[in-house]
Amino acid sequence: MTLYLKDCTYVNWDSLEITKSNLAVAEGPRAGISFPASVPRSEDLGPEDRVLNCAGKLVTRSFGCGHHHIYSTLARGMPAPPKIPTNFPEILQYVWWHLDKRLDLEMIEASALASAIYCAKSGVTFVIDHHASPFAIKDSLPTIARAFDRVGIAHLLCYEISDRDGQGPREEGLAETDAFLASDRQGHIGLHASFTVGDTLLEEAITLASKYNSGLHLHVAEDRTDQEDSLSKYGKRVVERLQDSGALELQKSILAHCIHLSEREKELVRRSGAWVVQNVESNQNNNVGVTGYTPLTENVMLGTDGMHCDMLRSAKAAFLAGQATEGLDFGSAYQRFRNVHRYIQAFGAHGDTDNNLVILDYDAPTEVTSNNFPAHLVFGLDTRHVETVICQGQVIVEERRITTVDENEVLTFGREMGKKLWGKM
Image (cartoon, rainbow, N blue to C red; front, side, top):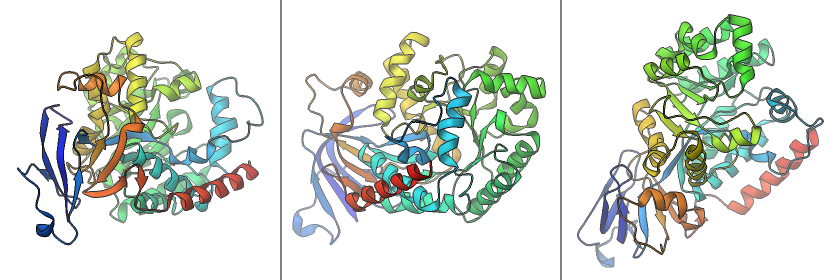
């Protein structure tokens, strides 16, 4: 099947070069795009070929999320915790760990389906997710993968393995990860954070990552307590511990947050080639602090940390926070927004190719050029402009409606599972 985008204004995601032309989009995980001088007449189209009129609309590469938590989807509007948290460890104890312990496979499926729809309608076609459900671990990753596949979203998954719930969940997390990667699915070896990961688990995770030529995906120095715990238990800071264990030799690794790092730790991250994910809104919500990432590494991409599925919103937040912390300019903010594609390519993952596109119905009040497109992205574009979304050549959102699943059915299921979850909490 070929999808023709007629009379579009195409913005190259990397060079920002603007081309006014027709666009031919081939379907498939290894297919691409081309720029024909004209589109075929209706009688010359193949039986499954289509033409979309894109006059006056922008077309560019769709978006990716570098760090997500689909398991938080059913948290929206949930009852207050049994105790109001006063610090980050209490936020984990009374909110997120209180929630994730009560998830079952049905709830996980509902979370993944709803989150995938929200991602798609926000123009996001590739998600790197970090999942936790310590008493519903077995088959959790295939459940998420199937849900994302149904909606049409590509993914790179992991299970958040931890020592915090004891030996049983730890061993189940390792087994689930091993089984998932052995089934030819792409993913990471997920860990929670240094303060809930002992030396034995860290060593086993590194061994598993090496076995599958993957990397770790973990939270690093999100809060000062992570550093305090590492210094108390191991006599070294978090990144120093990762360095000494050999974890930083895994260049496919993702280090989420990285707020409270020393200059030596920043140098270790720079030298390692590992990737860092910035999650500004989540950091502000949890009151753990903000930081500048420019001195840390160029390998910085953006995530949502499960707060929402809107990467345009994350880009705006990163830019605005970066004004105060590091004097971030439009170009640097845009680079972080797009670095997820560079990470996926470096990882060798599939599902994020040139035929992943978003059609934006953006009637700008000023001219859009190669020079000012990042400024339009920060101050003009938002999800209301996302009209059509294409993943691997397949239209998954058309005229702002999901095409691959019944959205009402999915969200009805989500509301049922939300009530079930809240009842258990």
